[in-house]
Every structure is written in structure tokens, then in C-alpha cells.
Image (cartoon, rainbow, N blue to C red):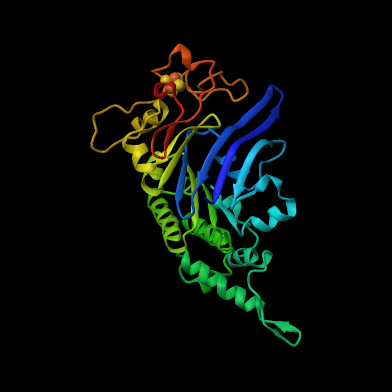
Length: 328
Ligand code: SF4
């Protein structure tokens, strides 16, 4: 197992009380798999990813739990150790490439920076000079070609505004790949892109997974994307995992009423006349979380016992777990 997160809790102080953004997250990612984290906005998906890199924005903080990466608890590492790990062993691709790339530096130089920071390319010394910069440039061109940026040598010195949205996202993936990470965290990497480019970027992530064996955690609110591109899926709600298991199982036999609701809300081309079902209500207030099942205010199967009791994950099939009283 590459990543093992146990009972992770992230809180933000606010004038109304503590916002429990992640409320006891437990999940794992195996070597070489693509794990999808799905859920509505505000379910704690992105905050969970940021926690894995210890990048929770202040005043938020990780208050308890464990994040074991290759057997080491990242919460016990020093800031320096974490800086060395980020971008090398664990990389992240963010949602909006335009705000992630620096507008005043050429794209090629930003990719080279990722190589330089971690001293990934060693140069050969000749008198007082080293050819390290040339070797780094060569590697950048290789990375740009690998992620599908055409004519890399011509585009090396272009600025982010000269790249389309899809090309910017490819450049960000090249930066993330520079350190040859074991784990790639992708936070809604296609949300800002149109559907054809979205498919190309997902294809690229798939190819990286197959060719390099990179473990990928893909956060998305789009269950269709997760269904197509992931091996396993985790369904999050109100900072908690409600269901997890192999993607095919979750799509074909969803056990939790929330997962069933999410699947029923996807439009299907074959059911043109069928009305799309929506999940009534909204996500609960993360400051005053309802006791018991966090989904009970929206669940059509809710019973009195769902309220007030903390529910554990129950294994309903091999590798398929669900947090719901219907399966106790
Ligand atoms: Fe619905 Fe109860 Fe299951 Fe929660 S525990 S999903 S309220 S049936």
C-alpha cells in the first residue's frame, strides 16, 4: 500500500464555531492504481488532497489522524522534509491552470524550475562551467513532448497566456511529472476545460498511470469521469467516506443511498424522456453537523436509528464498504 490515511480531521475556526472540513477520513491507495474521490462541493475532497501534502491553508489545521506514505507518517515529518517530498515523491495538479502557472515566466522555465529545486539533473563540470542547464532544458523538452505539447522547442519560451487551457493543463502535468512522483494528486484537473480537451487530459493521466505505474488520486464531482477513469472509488460526504470499493461495483451496484442518488442524477442518452432525479436538500452545516448519519436529512430511507449513533464502515462485499444502517 502506498498511501494509508487514518481518521484524518481538518478544522477551520470561524466566528460561528469550528468548521469540520474533514471529519474522520480513512482511505488508502495501492501502488499503481487510480483512485477516484467523488462527492458534492463542500464534501471535503479538495481539503483531503491538500492535507496529504500538508498544505491546508491557515487558519485551518490538521487536528488528528495519520497520513502514512510508504509507511512514514507525513504528519510527523519536519517542514524541510515535506518541502523535499512535495513535487518529487508526491505531486499535485490543480484545478485552474491559469492561476497556478506564473504569468511572468516562460512555461519551459517553470517546468525547469521543478527539476532545479530538487536537483534532479546533475551536470558535468568542465573547468568553471557545468552543462546542467542544457541537460535540464533537454529533459524539459522531453517532458513537454510526453504530455503532448507540440513543437516543445518552439514553445519552451512562450508564456502561459500564449497557451490554450488544455495546453496549460498539460504544462502543469509536465511540472508534476518532473520529479517522477510515486503519487500524483489531481484536483478536478478537467473542470475548467471543455469536454473534448477534458477527455484528452484524462487519457493522458491514464497513460501516465499505465506507462509509469504512477498512483493517481483523482478528485472530481463528476461521477461519470470517475466511473470511466478510475479503478476504485471513494464517495465523500460532509468530510466523511460513505462508500468505497471497486469502481465497477459502485457504478453497477451502489449500496449507499447517497451514491445511488448521485448515479440517478447523471443524465443518460438512452433515457431521453426520463426526468433526472435530484437529491433533495443541501449538504449539512459543517459547524453543526447532525448527530449520526450526516446524510439523514436528505435520505428517503432514514429511520429514527440513523440519528444519534456514530456509524462505522461495514464490508458488504470484498473490498466494498458502506456506512449505512441498512447494512448492519
Ligand atoms: Fe439513510 Fe440511515 Fe443509511 Fe443514513 S444510515 S444513508 S439516513 S438509511
